[in-house]
Amino acid sequence: MHWWIRHNLAAYAVGNLRAGQAQRISAHLKTCAACRQEVAEIQAGIARTRELPLLTAPEDLWERIEPQLQAHLASGQSAGRPLTRRGGQRKRFVFGLALAGGCVAGFWLLHRQHIAPPPGPTWEVARLTGTPRVGADALGATGRLGVGQWLSTDGASQVRIQVANIGQVVLEPNSRLCLRETGQREHRLELLHGTLHAHIVAPPRLFLVDTPATRAIDLGCAYTLTVEATGDSSLHVTSGKVALVRREGGEEVVPAGAVCATRQGFGPGTPVFEDAPQALRDALTRYDFENGGEAALTTVLKAARSRDSLSLWYLFVRVPESERGRVYDRLTAFFPPPPGVTRSEMLRLSPKTTEEWREEMEQDWLGG
Image 1 (spheres, rainbow, N blue to C red):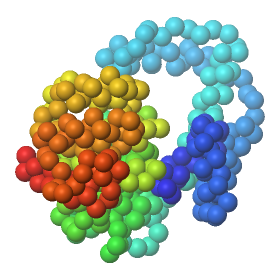
Image 2 (cartoon, one colour):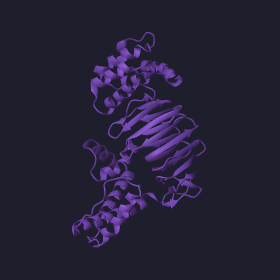
Image 3 (cartoon, one colour):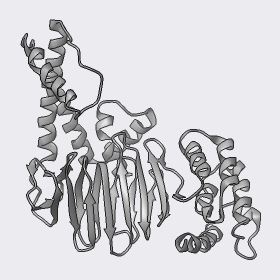
């Protein structure tokens, strides 16, 4: 999917993807001029750092930096082991080279991401605390966010974003997002890392948020979405429901009161209600992300309540065919299948019959 490919172009450019992922992007680049240009610009930025002259750092550079870092640690603003002098001209040279490379990369990123938005619609942004930034500029009491601009908060900043005329998003400290699209057909953000709280009142599928590993699609709801520095994310829906799109196709609908974790390389896990037994939640994590296999699935089936048919349903349509019967039998203990439908028919995942069954269970999920 194009949104997943765009998120991984930088990793592709430096050769940091698995073979299958790299092949998928290579195939996409043959037909997408925009992504080819993106990769070319990333590679150009990398090339510029390699063209830096090799210079020796001043002899007293570390002596000037170390006291300030030690004072910063002593003030309690950072945690870590005490700093020690790293003597030798070679190490000071490496430090200086790393600093110079970081500066070049930083200026390149500023050029790529902190550009003035093109003419067109913008969203109102209000500062709640701290000093957030729109692009490279500090935000005043209010400001505007245009398509293509990045909004960043530091550890003390928080902002409120007016999402066109359909709702609001609050962006928490240490977060970074970009307005990618806004119009009659779609309003879309990209959350690179951090936490946002969305409250949307709009027709389903009008508001979307991309993350490094998935896409969250509003179905009329309020929710919290967090993306870690690793690209892993978690979704907590507080009202309505949200669809999480899988990279390989398909989606999982997460209703109010439920959470769903996503991990890089795996995509969304199994939705689960936040009040589900801890044994069930732990077993789902092992099954989804840690190769827990049959043992983890057994724990899930044993711990599940009637309300946990939400989790059992998504397991039913995803588990290997050899395990599907076990999940089906546990589900039918809570919700019998539609009249006249045979077990073998359900195990074949006939679209019409399974959808009818899911809709019946969904009334229970939404009703709590």
